[in-house]
Image 1 (tube, rainbow, N blue to C red):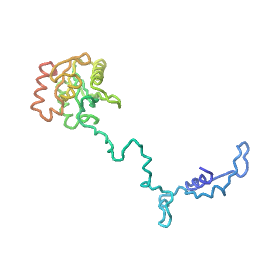
Image 2 (image 1 turned 135 degrees about the vertical axis):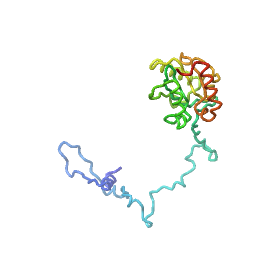
Image 3 (image 1 turned 60 degrees about the vertical axis):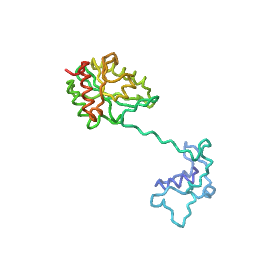
Image 4 (image 1 turned 45 degrees about the horizontal axis):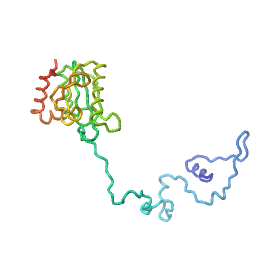
Length: 247
C-alpha cells in the first residue's frame, strides 16, 4: 500500500493523518513522497455501510464477475461431471461396521463393587437420553450406588478411527484404571449385540474377563426400552446366573 492509500484509509477510519514537515531530532529521515504520481491512480477508501452501495450511475469496475472465472483454474484431475462426495452422517447409535473404526461412548458408574457401563444411544450427546437415564438410575439402585459424577469412555480416543482390537484394549485399560483408582471387582456392560461382538468376539450374557476383572455383557438400555419383555428378562437371568444382581 502506498502512502496515498494509507492516508485515505486513515481518513476514512476517522484518524488524523500526520506527516512530519521537518526532520525530528533522533528520528530516521522520512522519504520524500511524490503525491502527484501516487494520486494518478484512483483510490477507493473504506466506506460506511450507507456509502458502500454504489449509485446506479457509477460503474462497478472493482467487483469481479464470478461466473466469468476461467474453467482452467480447476484441477485437471477432477471431472466437472464427477459428483462430489458428501461427508458421511454421524449415526446416533454406536457405529459398528466391518473393516472400519468404532464410534461409541460408555457412561460408567460404580455401584458397590460393580462397575456398570452403558452405551449411550447418541455417542455425541453429553450424557444418556431422557428415557435411558431413569432406567440407568434403576440399575444403579439395584447395586446401591451412591450419587456421583459418571465417568465416560470415548471411542475413538482421538480424531483418528480406532479399530475394534485397539478399542477393546483401550477399554480394558480404562476398566483396570477405574478399579485401581476407585475400587470395584466386577464389570457389567449394557451394550448392543453388534458392539459386543466387535469388541469381545463373543455373544452377550456369557461371563469373561475384562481388565483383570469378571465381566458380563447384557442388553443395551435402548434395547431394554424398545423390547422390555425380551431384553430385560434375558439380562436379568444372566445377571442372576453370574452373580451380578447387586447386594
